[in-house]
Structure formats: structure tokens, C-alpha cells
Amino acid sequence: MTDAIERALREAAHSLPADPPPDLDTEAAAAASLIDVAYARHDTPVGTLVLAATARGLVRVSYADDEGAVAATLAQLARGVSPRVLAAPRRLDEARRELDEYFAGARRRFELRVDWRLTHGFGRRILRSTARIPYGSVSTYAQVAAEAGSPRGFRAAGNALGSNPLPIIVPCHRVLRAGGALGGYTGGTGRKLALLTIEGFEA
Image (cartoon, rainbow, N blue to C red; front, side, top):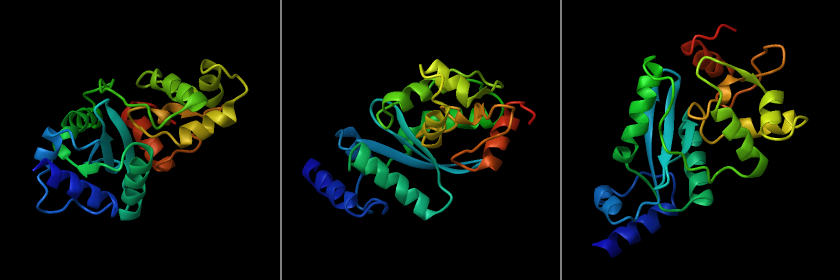
């Protein structure tokens, strides 16, 4: 049984982002610890998200605007984490619940464990600094760069935030340009403004 599951996972990895084979028992695969990355799609007020988790915690959140975006996310996970990526929505139940509470205005802080392995060096320090910005508050690129140890690294901070693998959970939408302009956002400025509006911020 385990050998058959491993073979199916290897074959699926070569054709990401195809759905798993219909005869593959994903629960058995999970129980046998043969899934390194579990993912699920989740509908929210700002669009469909792809959520992915490892044994360490949530590793990826991405906006799934089309199948190409989904494919790119799954390919990134296969390259950066493990090719054993499989749809296993039950493994993402806690993340989906916390996100639903956030969008309903009932959650101000995420309590999910996070797997930081898709971040590195200065970029990771920027994102950890960003993760500490409180709900309903905002910061600037220069401020998060200074908190990460490089006061002049605001451009590098912008690059790190633009490649944030965990938007919403690591709230890069709370980082604005000096003077209060929205600045860029991986999901588009419309989503950035929507997330800030949920938190009571008025641009």
C-alpha cells in the first residue's frame, strides 16, 4: 500500500499542478507521512487563495487568480520544499478557520505555526519585522528596514515584501510608502486597500 502511494506521488510530482490521481487515498498518504506539502484552495472576500503547509507549519499563501497562478505556486513548492505536494484540504482546516475569522472581523492576530523556509537572510528579517505590525496599524518600508537592521535598505525591504510567501498572515499590506501612499502589493493595490479597510484603516 505504502509503495503504491509513493509511486503515485512521484508520478503526480512530474505533472504538477494536476489533481492527484483519483485512486490515490490522500488520507492514507498523510497517515503514512508521504505528503511533505499539503495544499488547499480557499475562497475569501479578496479572492481564492492557495494555502500550503508542511509539518513545520503554514509555508505558502498565494492569490489564485487563475490556473496559471495555481501552477506557479505548486511548482515553487515542488522546487523550494519538496516534490511531494498533494491536495489535502483537511490539513489546512486550522488556517482556513483563522482566515475566515479574520475576514469576519473576529480575529486580530493569527496563531498559526509558520514555516519560514521560503525566506532567507535580510528578506526573512524584514518579514519577521512585518509580522510584528499590530492589526489596524501601519508602518513604512524604511521603518521595517530599520527594524531589520538596515535603515537604508528600504528598496530591499520593498523587494522582500513583494515576494512575501505568506501574505495576509505576514501582513505586508500594513507597510506603506513614506507619506502614506499605498505602495505596491503582490495581490494588487485593490486587495491591499481591502485588507486595510477590514482592519479599520482609512487611506
